[in-house]
Each structure stands twice: as C-alpha cells, then as structure tokens.
Amino acid sequence: MKFDDNTINSYIDNELTELERLEFEAELKINSELQSAVNDLINLNIKIKNSYDHILNQKIPSSIASLFEEKESFLKKLLKFKIGIIPALSSMIIASVASVFSVNTIQLAFNTPDSQPLYVLENSSKDLVLNELQKITGESHDSIYLSGIFDQQINYSIQSEFINNSGDQCTEVHFDQLKYKDLTINEAIICDSGGSQKIIKLSFIKGSFQNI
Amino acid sequence: MIPRLRRYSYSLTGSVDKGDDLLQDSIVKILSMQNESSIENVNAYFYKIISNAWKDKLKKKNLEVSPIDEYSNYLPSQNPSAQEDMESRQQSHNLQSIINQLSDNLKTAFLLATVEEKSYKEISEILNIPLGTVMSRLNEARKQLKKIIHKKELQ
Image (cartoon, rainbow over all chains, first blue to last red; front, side, top):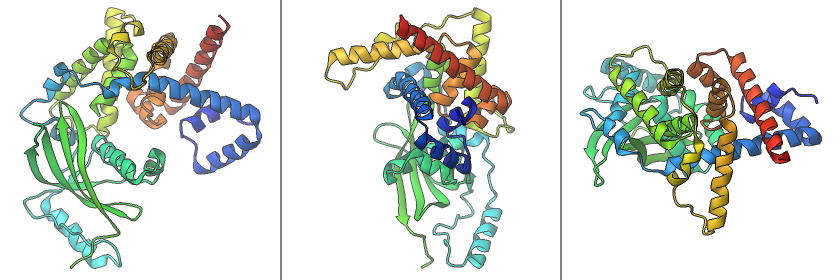
C-alpha cells in the first residue's frame, strides 16, 4: 500500500495537512484496499465513541455539582485561570487604532467603557461558543475549527451577571470583533447549570457592525 | 466541558462511579490551585490532571477496570425496541471490554484521540510525551484492537 499506518491514522484523526489529505483522498478513490482499511477504522472509532457518549446525557452527580457551588462560579474560575486582563487603557488604544486604520472593516459597536475590562476567552468556553455556532450554521465541526477561529484570541467583556429562572448562574458577555465567515458574533449568555456550562443565547448579525 | 471530562474519567476507569470519583478528586485538586499563572491551555490541563490522577490511582491501588457494572447506569434508550436497546448495550460493553485489554499508555492515548477527539499536539501536551510517541501509541493501540476484535470474531 502506498500509505503507511501512521498516515492512515493521521487521516482518520484529521492530522494531515491539506496537501497530504488531498493526496491521500486521491489514492483513496482508486485503492479499494485503502478504502477498506479507512472504513474499518472510521467504523471502529464511531462505535467506540458511541459506547461512551451516553454519559454526556446524564445529570452531573450532586457530589461533583456541589464542588461548583462556591462563592465564585466555576465558569469564572475557569476563565480566571489564564485570563490576562487587558487594562482598560490598552483596550481604548486598540479601539482607537482600529477605528483609525480600518478601511471597510468592523467598527467596534460596543466600545468598552473604562469600568469593563476585556478578558480573553479560554479554550473551554471557546468550545461552547463554537459548538453553538456549529448548531446555528449547520456547518461541520471540522469546518468551523479548521476556519482558524479556534486559534484566534477572542476578547470579551462582561455585561451582566444574573441568576436565571432555573437557578443557574449566568454571565452575559459581549465579544470583541468575533467573526466567522460573514457573521459577526456579538453577544452570548453562558450559564453554569450544576457544574455544566451551556450557552442559552448567542446573537450575531450577518456582516459587520458599522458606526452610526 | 464537565460532561466531557466526566466521559473521559468514565472511559479510563470503565465505571461511572469510579469515573465520578476520579473526576471529583481531580476537580478538587484543580480548584485548590489558586494561582496557576503558568497554565497555557486550561482544557488540556484538566485532561492532564485527570490522566495523572488515574495513573496514580492505578499505581497505588492496582485498580481493575470493570466496564461490566455499567448496565444500570445507562439512560433509557430512545430506541422503542427493548431488544435493540439490549443489543446496543451489549455492543458497548463488548467494545469497552476490548479497550480495557490495552495497556494503560495505549488506552489513554487512544481514548483521547478517538473519544475526546483531541489533536495529537493536545495529546502530547496532556500525556507529556513527544508527538512521535503519540503516533506510535495510537498505531499500536489500533493494531492491537484489530487483533483482539479479529480473535473475538473467530471465536
């Protein structure tokens, strides 16, 4: 066979470069032995993943959920782990630079007031946002992740914090220039429900915000 | 993220209860770390803590992985057919038994790649091993799984 096991595994695990993937798929079209090897591995992956996925639908046990009922929400704790708070002054400079140098690009629709610092969204929370984006756009998980959005630094400011009707602690955040393709995602509400975080609102517009 | 960490703990231990204990211990450890300014990737860090906690438990208690006690922990299936539901459970149980035949090193890398869909780079970070080792472990795990499945099919 033209490709070794490591390459086949890398294909299954989405680890090939675009060029390598195209070369692999060209061979895949004409090589029945390779097709069989790939299909076997894909089927095995799916079956194994499914055999553990049922736990995702189960309620988080109280022994674990109670760990999050601290003064500080777990979401905040997560975010604070490696969130560099960008000083208000810096954010104002960034906003000014953006407005001066941007040509036909986004203007900040919600300039961050001095009292609202910008935070950097952590990967775990980014995951939540991107999963929601995937549901809304109907695009594949890979398509969204491969767009490079996951690798971007996403800044946000906290607009409000509240307890919703279900008793979950929720945080309303505004994103700073978060774009995916032609969508500008501007706001989300993230709630912590028994230790499990979920997004209950994600708002976006098609196109960019413009200064009024 | 917590449900996914819970799934990972469950897949490592082969038991929902043992998995929850592992996750609980890991979260307590994470929450007790107040000033971890050196953490670059929180997501990977959580997986790392769980993986290390599991290794420690295995070393200390020589725990056996037992997927068989999980039947009662399944949610009622959406499937209207009780027989199909039973078959699905049986298949899951069989697969988990097969995976538990892998060595801990192979199993951990394989579960992170297949169930948790982590990239090789993330697995390398979580398990603190070079990328080449991640690839060789995944290759070996899949080879062994193929052999075990083939052997089972012949029986």
